[in-house]
Image (tube, rainbow, N blue to C red):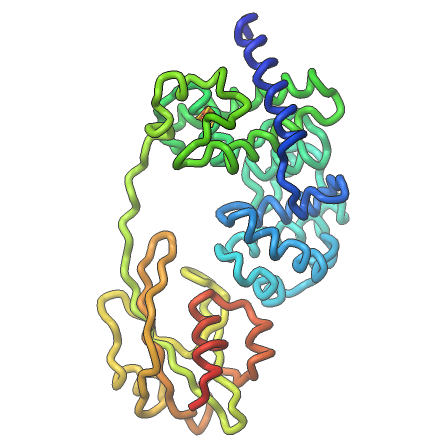
Length: 362
Ligand code: SF4
């Protein structure tokens, strides 16, 4: 049962949030046209997971121009989708989006299921994404708790918990649900959607993990963490994952026309399914030039540069070589010019290797 105090607090928080969002929401491409098209919501939500809004804003319209409908996306082959996703990182999301589009077209005749529960049954749609699409596109009174909302709720309630803690998960969904309910009461048509978007926006812009701007916060008056001075401890820190080193040796191999050899990575693991220059990869140490030349059959190789690249869990060390084209291209190799390479799905390091370092000639 909801007590009167909780009810009034939720109502007041919701009013403040909705007023703030109406006055301060960032203009972002997926919010334009007042559109609540479920396909646009789905694409934007998957892009926004683990990628900054400013980066997504640069790529959203281009992706939508290439795949304007869920049918167009479902028809595309995976390589095209990965290529259009280039630069956004975390390519698994592109595969999930593609799989969801295929399920919507193949199993639902191209019509999005409307409720959060039905949406959550689509491949790749977790509870958050399903809630976001159901609420933003269809006005369902359901919460959508991402990392931003989780942080805001934990701070509002002053609970020092890690975000993965089941108690934090339960609390965040329950409290966000109550605020969404208050929003729906305030504005029956779109209140639930506005509260969800406002909570996400508040977490992203005003209440980030580091340096919350409590002086600018519309809900500061109700925030327990702020009153107790505990914002820096909420959410509680989780243990850092152990980072692993990976050593890559990539070889620029040009054919007689100056086109570069490109291969496709396997279907599992880091950068699965993306393209790369022929590469030797090992975990224990860097390969020597002689080993690389022999393994790939490209004769004596010459080092042309090296750099480091960090992913969430790995420290990647790249050494880049030039080598001679083998008389017969090994299975899986293709020789492509820069335009064709630019149209492939490439990880950031391989984009640098093939398009920047590779442009340097022999
Ligand atoms: S008052 Fe500060 S800590 Fe509390 S929700 Fe607002 S920005 Fe976050």
